[in-house]
Length: 460
Image 1: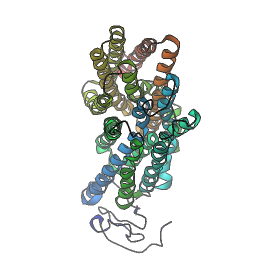
Image 2: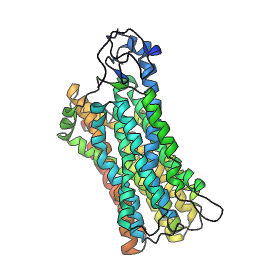
Image 3: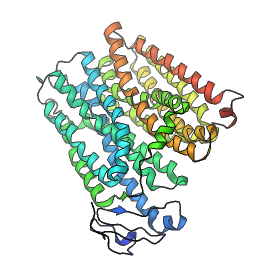
Image 4: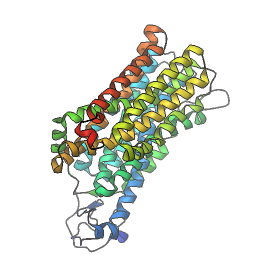
């Protein structure tokens, strides 16, 4: 723990060091640190406090958090672009084994999201960002070693792929940490930037790996892991030197308990499997699908799917603010169904152009749906009850939905694996996905947009 308290009146501009005074009695409107970069007084809702240092501290923590989360998503998605290259590196894997390597990081990442959320109040946002960033060294270093040994047992390879799931857990802790720093009036923008910045890590790694691994006469697949290590160390260093811990951040178990008792938590979590789960699932399998169905096409274009899905997420929130989240979410599911139908038609015709365009439509729709579904959460709980209890339940719902939704990243690759194994085609899986999207659209309409319902009257 920190050293004994000593008085100080130093403000944010002069306490930007890990060697800050051990403790302080802080005047309202100023930010002071004690040892270990702990801040004991944090009141972003106070305009004076926010103006006189709070906004600067929060912005600095947000920027580093985005960078760290970006790397978390990059590691989480790393196997999505490595798996299609394993054959060229000497690995002899079945189609089912390839999809397992893509799916298991999503399964682990989704499972880690709730415990990662509670790590911030227990250990401190700055401390946990350092620790969670350094944890990313395990999957990257292990991958760099494993891909140089094609004879490695599949079970060991699967365990190494599972390590990448720690990158998926980073999203939850990063979002929880940033939520403590910003006032309610600015949380939406801050969390939106944090989420979008993280999601872009998927596109970035799918763009960079095919370029980095190329050698004169083959591929150096170990570079896929090695290239991230310097950035991970940089993120950990920046977090250690420049981020802060808030002693006022508290784990609110009551918010999770309240959320679990509310039916809307489980309805929205179901919908989020269809939006975010589809995004992370399709992002994971897209390079492998391209390699399997159109082997002459370069994998360097696979990143465009994750890219358009990431940048369209804020758009979903913006449109939802104007016309209602439920309407946008329903439209997203309809468009996702059309995109999947287009992919089926492309497979029948052997048309790469139609296949690629259909998946880009799918990705855009998942991104828009991510933004609109998240926008629905506070509004739904406000209509459902209102007051502080509903605010707490909404906060719990965000954490639960984020974790459950990520399991879609496991279901989609496994669905394609089963479809390929049993039918020799991706089409059956896509038809099932279309049916699921139809059910989700109907559920959204029935609960949140049906004429005469309280939710529809409130413009959810």
